[in-house]
Image (cartoon, rainbow, N blue to C red; front, side, top):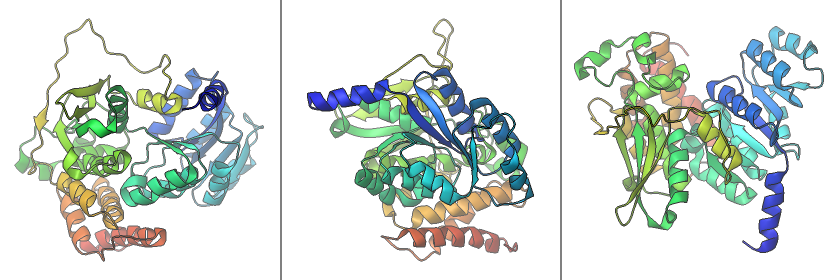
Length: 404
């Protein structure tokens, strides 16, 4: 980097950055706001968005007073009432609709976008941030699962920065920075907690209740991702995400079970050295690193207590217990439309499980069936991906003969 470019980068880091938090009422959004409140001398909360949970959203607007607050859910009486409120945050402009959200992201008012919208619904805003050249802190893994090649091309075309917020991918990113660089990477090792049912006999898994699947031993996450942890579909999606983020082949990606969730992932270099990133399970650390990279500052995240004993273990993944993981490697190899279909089918199947319509063990089976029967295309356009996302969800309901 030339001296002029270095100075421009330094000047930018010293300026207060305007941040948009998309999906503010979710667990990642909540943690992001906590981080930003600790770094208020460096960041300004310029935009908050949510899809629902208007009561929580109103509380966030009252506390953080963003310049703009946007609801992307359907227009109804509750949303209309929210639009009329002025008490607590009268300086905030209230708006409704995805179109308004995209316009706000693309504007010069925003420097950093934290993409924490859950599911395929976050793809459009992630693409908009990338094409607009923003720093994109990506917690929405579905954007890369569904349209990885498209998003990476948008990042390159727009001159954006793509920083991972998933704890595993942040760990890989940090470990690569600490090593010799990507060219010397032999493989990456994604760690998985194994979920709340890790020690259950395989034959008993079909009897797991919703409450069993949601009792995660180390992480406090939303319901959908906690079920994904129980099936290890979360790791399947992370395999696909890692392929695109770090330009890897599926053969360069390994998954191991690490019950303590202290090692967030590792990078093995060509000489056999392994660099890992460790910290207690607290999403505020990867969120802050995405916001402040390449700088580090004191964080509100929990720290390792080096004065107490701590055991760290890892085990190979049992494919019989976690059949969903194979789907992730398959999609990472095939690409094209497979990511959209797997993601849509899984979201629909998890919803059915949470509504007690199917067994936990049926989720991977349903996803396999839908994936095998879709019309595959190696180079789909965005509208084709969105069509297949809808088709896969409808197909899941047809698979168990439930009206859509």
